[in-house]
Image 1: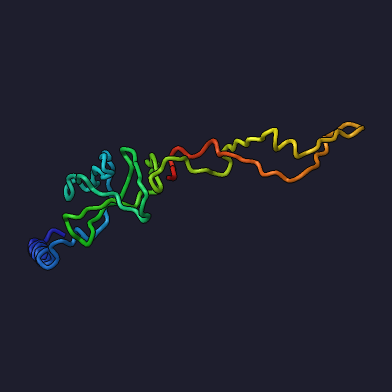
Image 2 (image 1 turned 120 degrees about the vertical axis):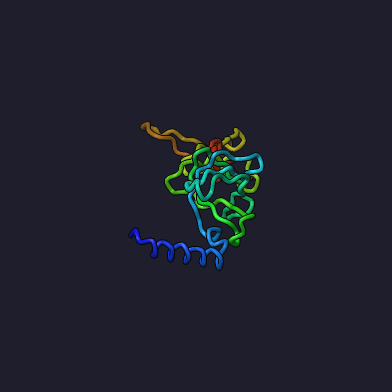
Length: 167
């Protein structure tokens, strides 16, 4: 509609809304791309709407679990908003499901790769533990029969996730 009276009315209404709710934009969630991650874990973001949000710097990455440190790749898609609608309290969270930018997740300080189903385990079997068993070969051939006391074997997980680490 290209009616000058309607356009004036629309601008007047928008001005009233902005006067009553000056920080309404700060209550939403908006898409952005990670430009880089700072040493302190905060993010440099390039919002999709570059007119309203030219760029955001040192935006804390907030997630639901305390004690978790997340490192993300450049180009990772996130959502950003402002805590309590405060323009001075930006935060990034809510990664897009299609985003594959997770580089590492450290739980409780990290240090050891998290074990997964199928990861390798090395078991150390000592001669002392073997001596508790007797091995008998059947007279007609075949597999040995093992008899003896139950022994507990010590094992160590030898592979784990390089992305998820537990302290």
